[in-house]
Length: 125
Image (spheres, one colour):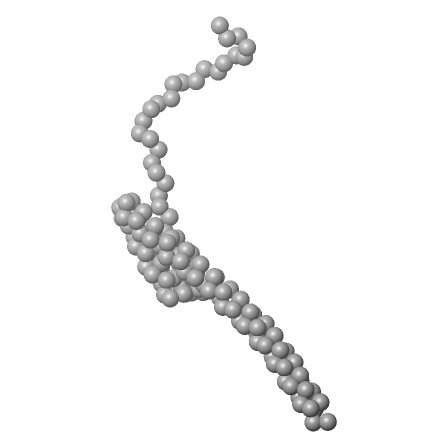
């Protein structure tokens, strides 16, 4: 017999249907943001189209189709965001490395021409 703590009497829990799965997200705000601000290769517009389809299906009650379109909208949104963030960073890195390389090349060429001119002055005397 368990006498450590008094127990509260609870009514037995009713076992019914399992809780319904959460409704799919439509990612509409993210798609609008990608369409207006970071529209890389029109992926933001494609994401917006799938987000609107997902919202329409969710409102009409077709949850499976809404999940499908929501997944596609999320994929295109991620691609548009990644492309719009990664490609400018990559382009900036290439420009910086190109400028550094050209400046080193210019310094070496100035040193080369200075050496050639000073060497030809010694031979003339």
